[in-house]
Length: 367
Image (cartoon, rainbow, N blue to C red; front, side):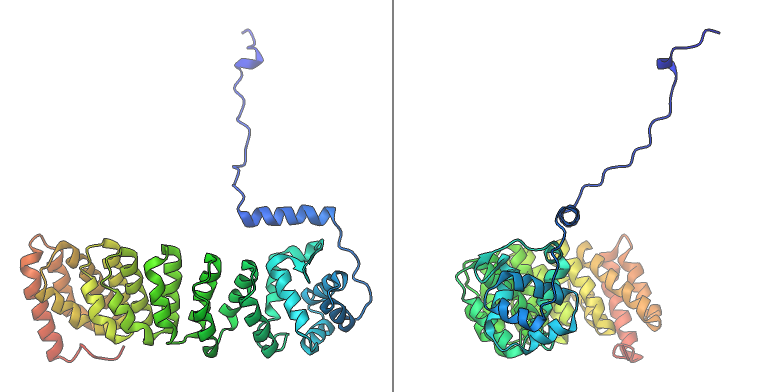
């Protein structure tokens, strides 16, 4: 047999590894690794951290990066130097570095270890109560930065308020909610949620007509953080013509889990938008057996549309999983809701189940 030329021979395909697209964080880490190889970190030297803190406050960049390297290395002397330093300038320069990458208004080449996400997080920690800089000094510096003409400075200050904001900070944060920069407004809204101030509710609600969906979602998250005081405002908003507003209202009311929201969530089971109706069903489950009576009543009194039956069926099924003693009474209702003539059988089945549960005292048991 004549041997075949090489190009007729079938060779196994080479093994290839699929390329995974690099995310922004992966690209930054890769770039940082390359920079670390190309730019070795200069020696820190033997200057005591207390002296570095004084020089850094005076605007000396060499002392600043050396002090910051000591800080991210968790050096005890550096922490004592920062916490005991009685000068606002050091805190001001640290905030400026985190926001703009400059020190005392002057740019400088930042050593590679200070370019990482960990370094930024570690420096922000200095502004937390009891973690480094005196708390009163932190509040003073951040308040000044909130009025800085540079948007990045205002944003960084507002971001720190999302971690240290207190009830008494709410008036200032509300005053600045009309900031021209969207990123600053976003952080201010988050900060107001952290303060948990009921006084912030009208100011947050007033923003909703003119915001996009992303900022709107942050507003609702802040209202959720404020808690029970926000329930009446959320109930009023739940009838909005905008679907994303109704969805967020239902979600927030479920997260707060105030019993005043039960009737609103029950009505939302039949919302014209499928997403809103299903969010209402999921949130009602959090109320436990308190949801059983209103769900059965809505099946008795409302037109049992496929939409309403679908969401109520989910809620009652979850109740059965959680409370086994309800199964004999709710299972027939679920069976009727899944039948072809659900609109005829479901109201009577729901009425029968409700009567039985009331007579046996199972509607308001523990849990």
